[in-house]
Length: 303
Image (tube, rainbow, N blue to C red; front, top):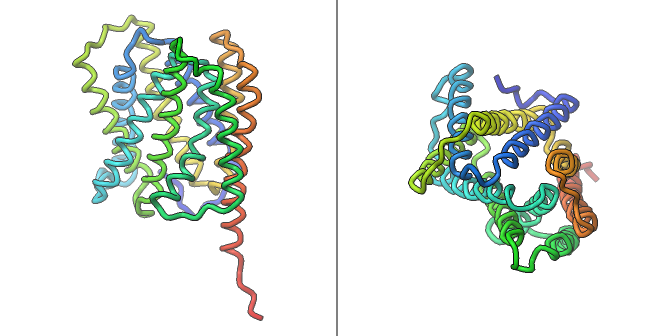
């Protein structure tokens, strides 16, 4: 059962978040091993189906299936469709470019979210965020520059990775605009249902019959995906977002290690230079949000 919002156990929250990073890394390894032999839609369908079943069982075993009822159909659709498109881009990009490159590019999502929030949610961007955006995009240009020769498949992989970041930021923007009363299980359930239905449509292009090893990797990717999502969701129930969010950047460490250990991938010099700029800009945005939140919550001392 999800913890109440009043519980504040930051150490547990950090542990759950780090566990989610490890579990998501397991999903990444499975997808990389599958490569292009199994269509991304087929893997996403199994991942979504497992997630729908697990989330329905959790809802039924805690507060009942009425937990899955919602009236925010439009916002669920916008969030889920943009998240689904982001997942397709991510899964395909994983088979095309080194893992460290993909991870570095994915960290541009907070930068795109900042711009989208300004354009569509009316949020103001002050000089700290503009500085962070500028530094971050310089890091992006350095990271992806060597890939943009448009003479090999890596260029398409980089563009898909960028599309994943933009679409992920779009999904987060819709999520931010949703009512605070919507349960995390409900939001995740409808997202999982959407990716399952959309992925099922790709069967018309033909799904091969996986080998036993491929079936194992597909099912493991699905299990890692749903439990990674749950661990991440619960981590935010025990600690503040300003405490949890910076831990996303440990993904870069895991991605570099996994890429080297399992796939003989060594990050290029452009990644070593560009990734710290992207990470630094994201951390600056997080620090600024934390600082503003602290100022707003400070008690007013009467004069």
